Length: 95
Image 1 (tube, rainbow, N blue to C red):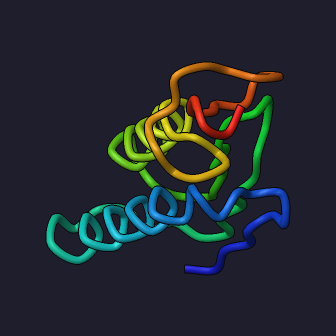
Image 2 (tube, helix red, strand yellow):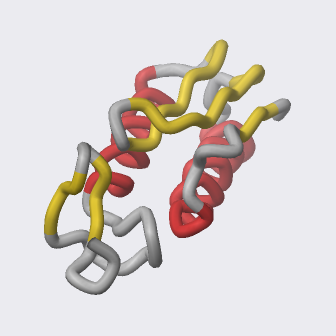
């Protein structure tokens, strides 16, 4: 998998990106899923955005889940978010 991670991506979301890539790799390896390539990981409208070529509906579901996880994870520290500041999820300590 070739992927490009934007400099704007908060390090607090690294675990979400790792979970996405691991889930896709396991789907390809164990379920004969469709491989993906040219992965672009970025922040759009304050949330994680993952675009790629290839994949299937399962890959699309993994990407949607990763985006939803970013909406509920503080971009500052990685704790559960309690509010949205300028479209970016934040916890009580980081707002």
